Image (cartoon, rainbow, N blue to C red; front, top):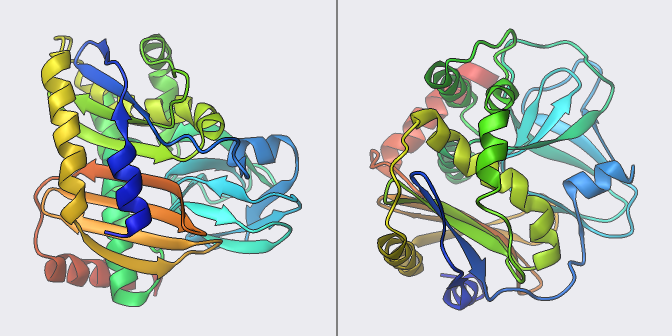
Length: 330
């Protein structure tokens, strides 16, 4: 494992358990590197120093145009949602945008039933893609990087999983929008969020659901993490809420499970790719686990790892991806 990523994982410390129903959330401490040298996506859009649009008037499902007018880099997190324009999208990977630059970014559609302008520009939402779909998207993007060097997701799989999420939640959406599931669960999400408030020095979360690690996200700056915390918590909560389980989890056992998961990461298979913006995009894979990390100037920017269901071999996954990729985009 890259020494910067391995060092960051080794420094992670679990904060006190925050438990609600069948969910245990542990604040991740030990990484805070002082004030963030970048803006988050929501900050940048609110300040009007970034403009996100379709790549052209006709648009392109897997790409968007971003124009930064900021003097600081801008951090876009894998799975963050942008709403508006011809259809809602999510980021396919974490990107640290360069200052005052125009960038074409890779995205996935999360609103299958709309292809018409709702607005000229995209707005930030309060949503990061649900953890279950995000982990599958991460794996498919990693497969695409192996197969063709592109940050492409399996769009058909994303749509299928959003449809499945809606069925499980009992939500009907006129445009098949992932956002409609979050809206339908907004009351429950808000109630649960109160149990998982950020603590001083927190730079990430690791989440245990029904006694099993779901995954974790971490950045290197507590001030930036505080802005990302609500949407990251909702990403992990939405699947747990749909299951509607109410039993409490054991905080002590959950802490041991979370700590063991962190220890498992260090011998993951690693591959590296040039990022869309600043830095190097690292991809990690081993049976039952997948993750990614962005490193710039020998410093961690963001990392996320997920517990994955057992799947077929990498060759089979790549072959399946290539078949669907041709069907969807060629």
